[in-house]
Length: 394
Image (cartoon, rainbow, N blue to C red; front, side, top):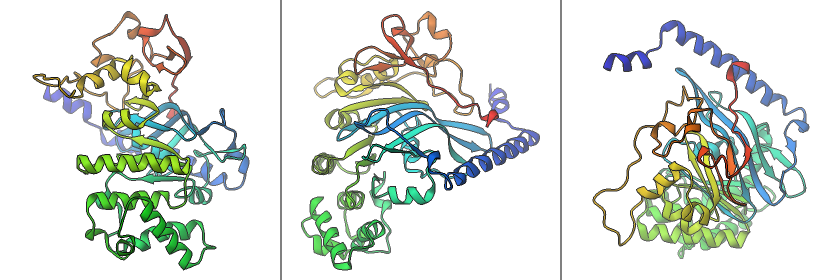
């Protein structure tokens, strides 16, 4: 058994050199195409399918060209974020939640990380949109922090330890609004600190990050994200490393600020309780693909995909005593060599005969509820199929 595992993970010197040459060729080509977009705006301007959405992910494929092969971190992901709504993205670690958001922000570690297919349409509010996949860096610098902002996972390390809080919040406003005077920028920063519930705003303005608690630092991160009143806030695990009472305060704060600014929130989390309390819509991801999406009521009261059902069974319930929590059997498939059938099949306890065929389509089982599972093949409407990109053809 040990020798079999060794063989499966072993790469010869010749194969390693082939992979390196292939990666270099493909990433150079993709970087050249991105550079060419600087010359022609038609390469990255587009229109929204539905103007009521702030962002539309349409069959997005984000791959990492590693030393052992191509890792398909996000592979054919499609969902929308409506204007003024909160969309919760859930799934286990490594399923592609954060990589999807980093693709939208163009913060992937290039050249090894590349969005190789699909479209990410961002609504500019004037009838046009940008396809973020092809948008050049000069345009993205005007969008990041201004139109789309991100609250990163770890408040204890997200702030620069050698700069005062005021300087770090000021920087965002100065970058996107250079016409403002220093006094106006400081007034805006103090307003944001007050907005996120910091009473001693003048004192905190002159403090360093190490002088603040975790909850206070998270509020500063939110203030930085909201400084330019963005139309979309990406909250990537915004309550990580915070105690329960502070978590509740931060989530209430985000919800209230979203309503005040009429922003949308993309909420990435493992915590199903957080999603149930905050989200209007829920997207469930597994192994780089969306397996189920719908309203919060659809997902929590009518879970349909076996993986979603497993997630719901594995969460503790207040007032219900059990010997041990449910554990989904098996392991996630190797992201370098994904199978051509349903990624969850080998762990699924609800298999049917069709499951032994190709990867299932997205099936609409109600007006708002879509699931990727053959169990609903005969009763639902086929919406489409997630599509991988053939990297050999790039």
